[in-house]
Length: 262
Image (cartoon, rainbow, N blue to C red):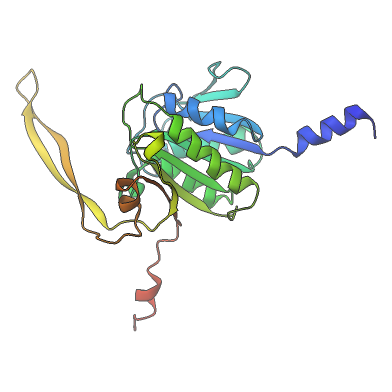
């Protein structure tokens, strides 16, 4: 085998990694994740052309999707899509890659997706869509909501998780929700495998008037953690750990199912 052939074989063996998010293709968090992921293989980016936070597992039906190439990340192939995060994964597989990637990494989200937030999160729904297709996937979220935040710790955590996943130190055929605390590097205690906390938002719709005098409502709320366990993602984040929660898209309540008699 020639030297050129050997090099080509080594390049071909590198995994194809799909990167997406819900904050939009221009968000600093996705650029931070790309910098980490491109060390491990060929990175292709397909992300929303505008923020899509809170979209959950929504897909676009009844209107066209637009997909445009963008030059935002140097030599990394990247596209912006007019649809939702889940749309981005679907169209990436069908029209950009023409195959399933080896891995899908979503984020780094600006803001936490711990506990019940996993249900609403576009970041996690993109990762979940990949998992539905049999693609190992991770959603990364950082507690700092600021677009000019320091992503050094988030990148460190992402690097460790991606390295362990690709090298089979943690199971590949899985879906993980990873959250990183907003904390100094010296105070960071490491990554902790956790369960999802039993927590929720106490929501309130504030009634207001627009400039024309018409009524509208603005959603507000307060996060309430009702779970006192020390093995949850919320506990980990408040005690200096990054949380890693294995999740699934099968919503069947198996314990209850076994008790139902019809």
